[in-house]
Length: 256
Image 1 (cartoon, rainbow, N blue to C red):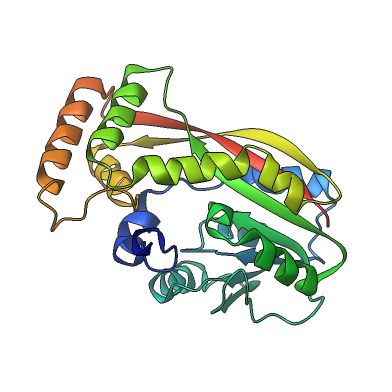
Image 2 (tube, rainbow, N blue to C red; image 1 turned 90 degrees about the horizontal axis):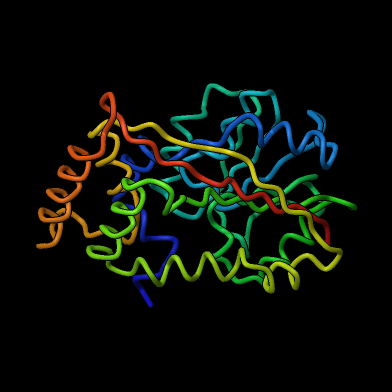
């Protein structure tokens, strides 16, 4: 279905994506340093790298990261965001056709994207580009939906106005739930959960909502009612001018 095309569905949401999607904490870098022995001598390939948010903490810590992204608008945003980092490289490619050389990377990072990939084709390509005993790390920022009234009401808003929210959420939950990862990581994998969160003002919350590909675009008749409902939600639930969105940063790492 065209609506689920991962290469094009974020093209008109890049500015909001850069502005308001959750970043990735330094604790992710620390985890991989300790858990898989990641060092600055290792080359990281960030596949489906989007606007570069997942590569940023690694580049900031002095790592070499090759960002592979098929969407030209998102790739251009990453190049603008990350151009000052000496370890940054940008490549037009996909999970099935990265364009990278055989056995050229030590660690593959996939953040918020693996559920869009064809697992079989992806595994073939990852096996080709990984060096011997290379690692694959799959990462999702999983937004919490309960525990506070704001989170519950935000979730209800997405169900009310989302175009294909339930379908996308199910796709993510199914992949991260276990069976597909067990088939993908034939040598087994480890799972860790880290804390992450965003504190957003109204402008940031609007951008966060618009950055989600399952929400109506401005041309939709549902857009204005959705934004009115969001403004009311913020007015009711904000404290000191902010609302907090917490995440479980789920990290899966293993070898083939």
